[in-house]
Length: 393
Image (cartoon, rainbow, N blue to C red; front, side):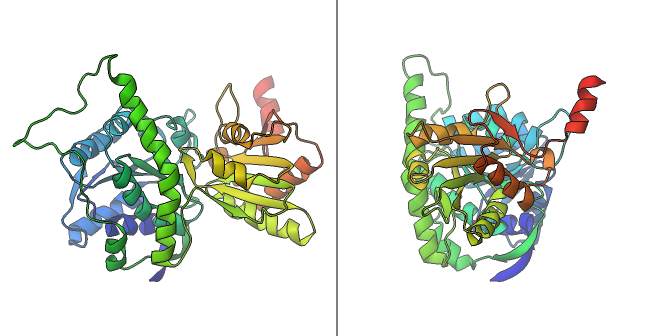
């Protein structure tokens, strides 16, 4: 049913439709509305049976999910920014144990200085934690990806982060199509755990592993992640057949046929990118756009195919690796297999600075005009007067 919903409310209701048995929560903006809405659904009995755990920290939230999942419960939590970093040890434990936990990351900048607004520094910092990472481009896709995340996580025994840009999507009100419970029950099967802690049949999981087996444990996690490159599009296709709309998959392309310049984005910037592409196409410019949905595992072949005809690639992302440069851009360059194709890497939207259509258009104009050097990290919309005061003060 279509409703006007805030992004956080849409996600909370989508999670509830997946019938989690345990929700562990510690509030942190801009995630709070999600866990508040879920607590209310548990209180009223609309989400039952479900145990809602108010824990003492983000570390406690992930630890509770690990315990719940290990005894056979479908578990969920949500966090962002410093909260995600605080639970880092447990995040690695969840993937190492192969527990199919689903977590929403409402992307927010990481301090210092303190900043509660959006960028993707938090989930990017944990890109090597062994979790699948799916990034939503819209409120509708954020809701849809949670349904797919539970199918994916439980099919592969791998935890999944569903990342959505904080405030940009969590607090945006859009028309969202939420399916009926019966539709979701047909798509998300009952949880059948592969391993269960049971006092009647005691085993130990997560115990000390020495050099004789640790490499094999990490290898198995990598193999499951690589299998996700087949499962993500397959589950996305099943979703499209069942719900009548395309959502999820490895990536989305927009007017890339015959495009000489292709703009690559991740997250909500895809909307502005596609609108600018439409404007430029109407002017006779040969441009297209690619939005990355599955960031980890990285879809090398899908990216290579999507960019196969491009003579120039422009990457726009909301995070970077200090001292190294672009994160998504580095993965894109590695995927191309054509070293002569220039890749222009640009950072935008840090700390909640808006990514406007005019900025995206200027970026593409500068790239086409040869004013942006490949191999150099560019920062969109820098305040040079502020920088001058900071460096001379």
